[in-house]
Length: 353
Image 1: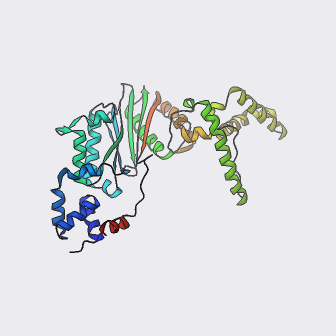
Image 2: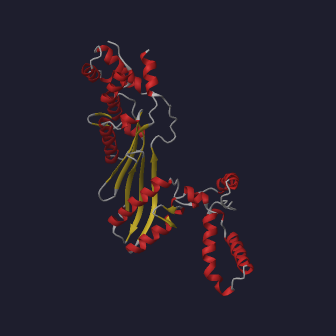
Image 3: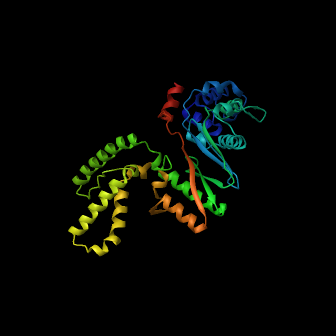
């Protein structure tokens, strides 16, 4: 019986097995679908090692957080294709993996691979699932936290596992359950706005200097297009980070604003009411790098009139204590992995020839 691409695709969707394994199973069963399924079930581990060198850039980010927020884990588990990542067997594999990481304090991937799970080494557990699921599987990275008495952690999964976030805060004199609820919202912000570090204070001065020219050139280039379309131009900043806004710089800015107010004929007695807003606007226009990369300096997704730092301070005041964001981790599925772009139908046809 002739084995068609459609038959291979159907069997792959049913079993999650690799394409060539599906073709061999159908050939062995003379095209009988149930017989091919039985063939794949009996195949065992023989295909796991062959699959281990395939690029695995799909999959899921999974999170486990204890009810009291004192312990948490996040793991990125990769598969080769998106539809296998949605398979129940893959989901169970990812769930057991994050639960295993959550229950143990592994130092790194090597420690995880050498650990025991279900009576076997974790490395063998992965191989068994590779054979069962039919695609290469990789536990790419993980993070786990153990919070102190005055800390709380919460997490968030976005887009069905495409992005995962854990965020931890010190919580003193406040209801930790309410802080945890707030951290869930903050984790959503982190998922959407992609901060890389907590604060601009972590930047290196040389890095900021190099980035200044790049950001300015980028805005100048954008303004050329805006001018062509006769749209308002964007402000080209003098600076891009609070790291550059020294006391000397801000003194010059204040002096310049006062000179402008004087030139506009504004009475000096009302300058104190106008200055704060103009200085705030200057800072917003000249901290673009901070807003792109620093969590506390970003404008909050749920209230873009305030920075995350201001929102945290307001929440602490509301709850009657102190809240300090101490760390966060954001995983985006497949980030940094070079993905191979394949036309599945064309690949099947090629393999069947």
